Image (cartoon, rainbow, N blue to C red; front, side, top):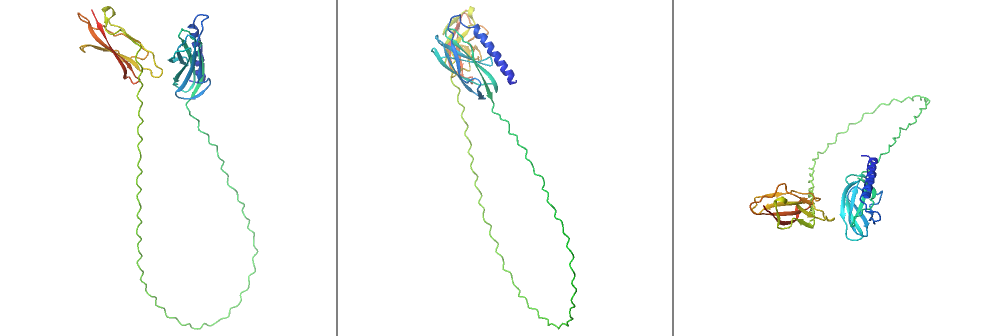
Length: 320
């Protein structure tokens, strides 16, 4: 998708959010909360990766939560602390490089919703085009001037001088001198110089970096039905509900409910439920006899690795 198409989609998302904010705005004359983005600033060029977002929101009745949208899609919601002026921090993990539009809305305790505030930023993946090498010029051969031979005039030839004839005298032949025989001495062979073998340098093996354990999300605020609840045929199977306030520092990885009878002959499980689920009903009614049958149901708060961080066990009776 081109950058032009991405910006057009982001502008359309802001217009849709503005219409939505007007549809849920309080009655005329009521005060509306105000919200603004401290960081990132509009037009910022950010490295691709996790980005810290800081927002301020104010309302006389107090701020309940702050919602975050990316390119018009819901990306997260953070509950605010008590007070008429709050600061909310959120970590934005973009899904792709390029231009994106961040939109923020604040929800007041009194139900008011302000106009959305947006900031357009762009993420870069850090790739740089390699430099282009400039062509080099190779010098051509240099011509060498050739020398011109100068002819030399021929010199005059001298006339030969006549040589007188001489009669040689007989020469005595010398006796040869005997050559003494010499026996060569043996040449000592040099001893080889011992070469020291270098010792191998020990290589240290890096220790593995321990993986931090996932955080433990908090307990649920409320659970229903209460302990010892009697489910009559009219409300069997019972519906299990819970209230949960998500912590910004440690969100749950999901929830799970397991039901067993006292003799361990009957069991049913909800499986891993998403972190946004707040109720669950078994597909079939809990079996019972002539009298009430007691069941134990366990509610688990799961970490991000789907292990149980907290467990709460209560009883429920299926009665005729």
